[in-house]
View 1 (cartoon, rainbow, N blue to C red):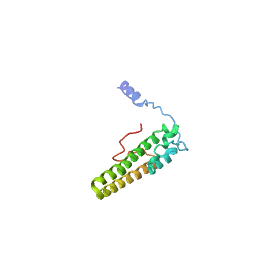
View 2 (cartoon, rainbow, N blue to C red):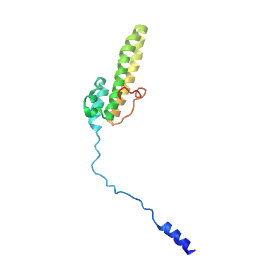
View 3 (cartoon, rainbow, N blue to C red):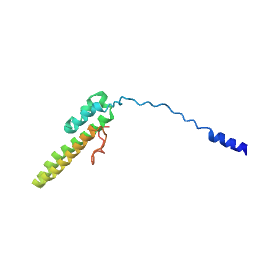
View 4 (cartoon, rainbow, N blue to C red):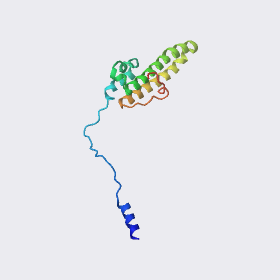
Length: 139
C-alpha cells in the first residue's frame, strides 16, 4: 500500500502552478476621450440643428460616442420638424384647433426625449432614446 499512498501524495501534494502577473494599481485615473466630446453632445440636444458639430472635426468624426449622439440628435431634429410642420400645419387645415392639443403632447414628448439625451450625454453613456433611438441615419 505504500506505493499507492506515495503516488497519491505526490499527485495531491504537487501544487498546480498558476501563472499570475503582478497587478499594480495606478493612482492616475484612465482618461477617456469621451470627455472632450461631451460638450458637443449636450449642445446638440439643446439646439438640435447643431448635430453636425462633432462631424466637422476629423478626430471626433471617427469617435463612436460623438457619432452616436449626433445620430440621436439628427433623429430628434427630423422628428421635431415633422411634428411642427407636417402634423401641425396639415392636420390644422383638416381638423382645426383640436390639433393644437395633439401637437402640445408631441412637443412635450420631444422635450422629455431631449432631457433624456442630455442626461445620457452628461453621464457619458451611449443609451438609445426610447421609441426613436433605434434608427441609424449616420453610420
